[in-house]
Image (cartoon, rainbow, N blue to C red):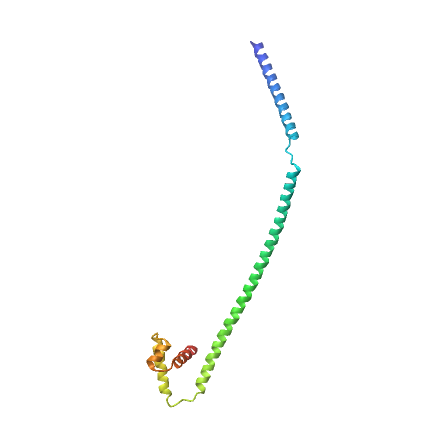
Length: 164
């Protein structure tokens, strides 16, 4: 019995070694076949690949130029916006100065005018115009109600706006 076990053990080792050798031969043959049967491109395919690579390169260059162009335009827009903001501030300063000058000029004109004998009557007429305007009436409605010219009513209202 022992001899049978030794024979089977020896045979199992032999079979295992034999199996490994066959597996290595098969792997070698597969590697050789893959190297020989490597996919090859035809000249037509190579031309298409070269053309696609060229197109990709040109597209990358165009993209870089476009990006640079966009950055320059952003910088220009920032500069223009800054200049416009500065001009707006200057315009606001000028408007404030003009309002100050208009107020000063109105005060000078009022101070230069000599008081007229009917200035109290005229002053009360102005107060009536201003009172009706405070109630929300338009210049034309006030003129009709007080039987005065529309231009005079508008002048009184405008002078009040400038003075305040």
